[in-house]
Length: 205
Image (cartoon, rainbow, N blue to C red; front, side, top):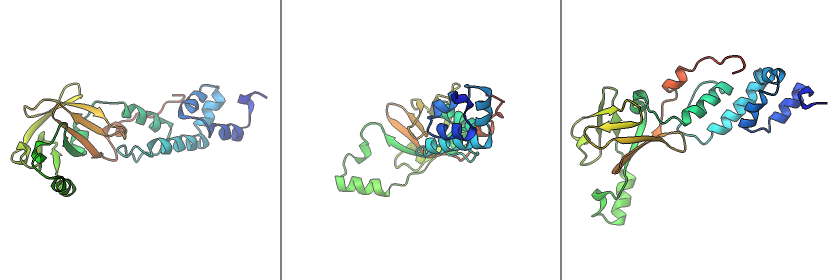
């Protein structure tokens, strides 16, 4: 008996141990397998892969029902290094100096640890296009500074400071960095703009 002629429950049992890549290739074995993996039982397999893939990606949150379609789009989104204005203003950001923090240079180690444990700086990229912060001594703490995303979506500029290069973090969050400072996300909105604009999956896609 050929593998493609096995009963559906046997095929599903085998595919439970398949990797995401193998599962995707399995859809191309024949029409019967494609239909099987598009069924409710097949969607359970994709949901399991979604759960395993997203388990450690704490920065990527989505309240869409896990499926093959959503899993593929989440992988594509993880590779995207183009940030939107909604994501910039809707994320919770942290800040650090790339080099030594000169503001702490005169502090003892105990004082530095105390400062690090009590700091609760707030950074805000407002939708209106202004950036403010509570970073002690920073210009943004005393007045709003304009922010702008470059036309290609891969750089963000705050006032006249050097542009920040956008990249993704290992947990699918965001990082913006220049030679002096780095901004990185703590959390993102449960639904980003890409998720709301997902096209409906086509048969056999």
